[in-house]
Amino acid sequence: MSDHTFKYPTATAPTSTLTFNTKARLVSDPDTLQFNDDLGTTKGGTDRVLEYGDNQNHYAFSFMFPRSHASLTDLADVKTFFGVVKRLYTFVWTDDVGTARTVRIITNPIRFEPIATGLYYQCTLELREQ
Image (cartoon, rainbow, N blue to C red):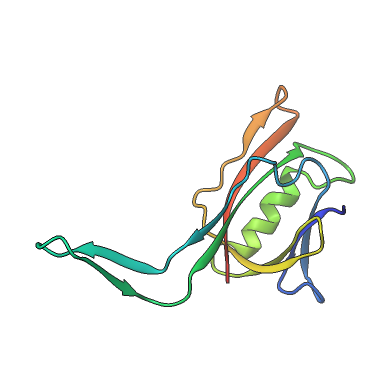
């Protein structure tokens, strides 16, 4: 297994990269398939579904990182990356088995929860595959 990486704008020519080598993608993070439709019921009780296109894959991505570190991804690195990408741009997430996905951050706001007496932070993102 290797590290999870976020690369913007592309995996082959990134201008900004995050590498998560400390507790990336926690085991409790679910993958979700979200239907792109609207389900309603008529007054007579019949289901009516309007379909708006392809289904969407959503991924919870939780990671821990140090508050400050000379060589590992730390809070300043994470905030800089998200400040560039925002929710406006997509980026490439390569997981620990080498699967690359183009994703967008759906989470707003992004919260950095202090853990381990403030030496580390945990963050959970919702990512939508594009």
